[in-house]
Length: 225
Picture 1 (tube, rainbow, N blue to C red):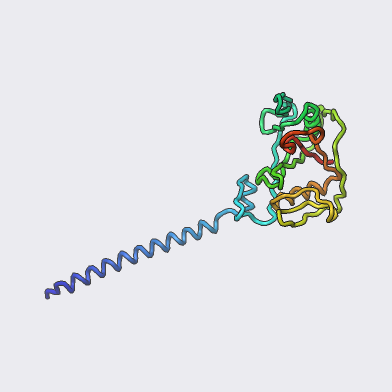
Picture 2 (cartoon, rainbow, N blue to C red):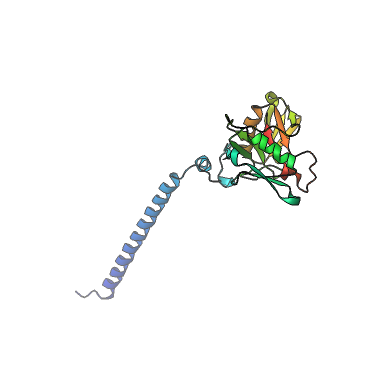
């Protein structure tokens, strides 16, 4: 029997059906793989703890990540930078521009007590003034400890009254509800700093005195007692 054009039409329909079935199957497989890959992605906190800065939209609330650099006290030196001030460095990551030679010597005196300097606000530039807040870790045992060349510049507070207050521009570290201490943009940074503040009773500054720079905050270093 010669079916002519009807057989040809049936053959074309069969080929099209087969091609469509394969295409749908491939798409389903790809979607399944995508779902498995997505489910296996590390969380924001896992990424952050590995040193990955997670975009704002993917960060988990109350992320508390410390940002610390070890340094070698034996290699700390003071270098004159002319009108720019005095550079305190260990030849590596430890690098602070200070307003005066006295401030530079004071910084070495503080640094000689510790093994690491930590920053709040460096990862996200997350203070309202765009500045970094430092604290120090790893009390150094043995070895020479420099004396402060000038009287310390410290402000006392009651750690029992300190808390985090949510405000329109971020998170405020506040003493007793009426004495704001500092404001940060990131909740995680505020949580890290709150732990530091509560474990001390004084916030101290190097570089506030006689600092008439255009950007005075860039020449100030903080420590806690």
